[in-house]
Image (cartoon, rainbow, N blue to C red; front, side, top):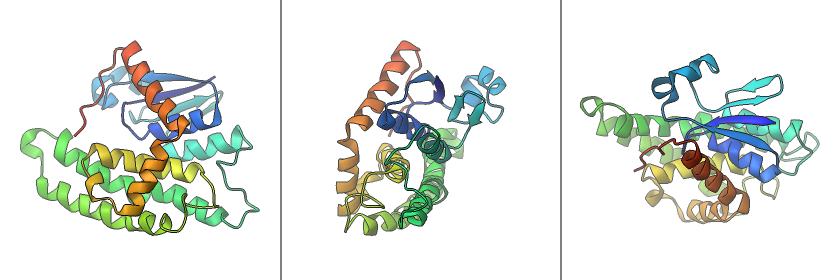
Length: 218
């Protein structure tokens, strides 16, 4: 049984969505955000105190996009992963890394300096500057989805899951109002997927059952 530690709305939603797309059995453990502050016992499990943390037998992982790639290759085969022999393999890997290194990174600073820091340490300028950074980098997704429903290989893949999470986070931060038309349509397609809906429902149900209050969203 795969175990996934998750916070409501956090980047651990990526592997949760991947698990639902693949139909794999898993146990979802909800934590308050940020767990390193509000659930200090979690540090004994993951010394980094970060989310996600996945356990699959002897395998333990903390990187959300890497977990998605792992699930697709270890528990595949699945069309969610682009194979070495496919022309789009390089594009697939590029999008997988792009999701966190380029898209989610500036969003974490928007979140920190608009919501998470104490009132006296918040900075509208920092939050605004990094929101512009995110929206600038989002032009790559706007361009890619102008000619195709999905990011690569002509089909829905894990690349869409990991970058789709960045759009979910953007919506919670109030940035989706600035999506271009292609990204807005792409985000609507992602939300319409049955596995996405199941992942959202699983997140909510586990939060209720485990008495973990969702993070307040913008």
